[in-house]
Length: 396
Image (tube, rainbow, N blue to C red; front, top):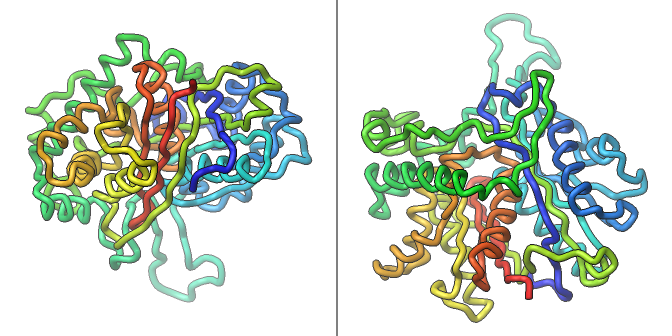
């Protein structure tokens, strides 16, 4: 989908990403998203009466939280006349919120808020039999955070990813090397002050949280190689996969008139947005396929894109996707890998499922401006064989 009028990424911000059961665990997802949204409105000085839609992407929805987007709008003091929408497209949810905001502006909206949020620490276990009672016998408790694929008979997603990666020539060593690189790049970017303008502090009952909790400065290839694969899979470990995380991201999208009315200098322009799907276990390579489609439809080649963000749902996802995008050209594959997740990815900083897609868009736009390039692309897999991707152009 290419918008019929220019759609601008005005600005964005995110919370620090918290560990599972870490410093953000006492915050409801509404409170966490509210603080992030308020930070964005304060830094943009955007008039709330000029916002036409609030779209919130969330994967777990805290096991039954009703209409989170509407609750967020009220919590943040937005006009009660503002239409809201909550969407669940699994890990793609935050990027799908951006895509729907782009569509809305293309159809005439002035500006839209796109939010991605997740509190995996507050995701409950489910006790299904209690609604109508159970005369005798054990009750079964389901843990949504086991992340199984119901389209594949409940097989662990981590196991399927490892199998698919191996089938495409990517083994444990490549995945561990990418995981180490993710941490190294994150800490380099942190030392250079890259995240100062991206992260907004969050107030919790136990104090202020200002930094991402998951990145491990002491990560080494020796430590990674000693870890045992999880869920009976061949390659995926706790070290080359992200954790279960908490976090929220807020982005302001605007059309030409709203941008002019607010005298705002945007981060970047959205060129096009794509959703695609394939087999239930295709997620490990599908971001590369989606990026290839986007840039081909824009008349570009992979070499034209200076910034690439691919969600590290697993390290394997980024490795296999860059390989797929290169189409068998080994030299190009290495070049693309050097441009992918240059400030670290989810293996290092975390993957709050509903928030990560929006985080990728924000990171890609900010890095594009930082690098001085013209084109950036972000892609994320999720939802048992689906992918969202966004092609971004530098603000002229």
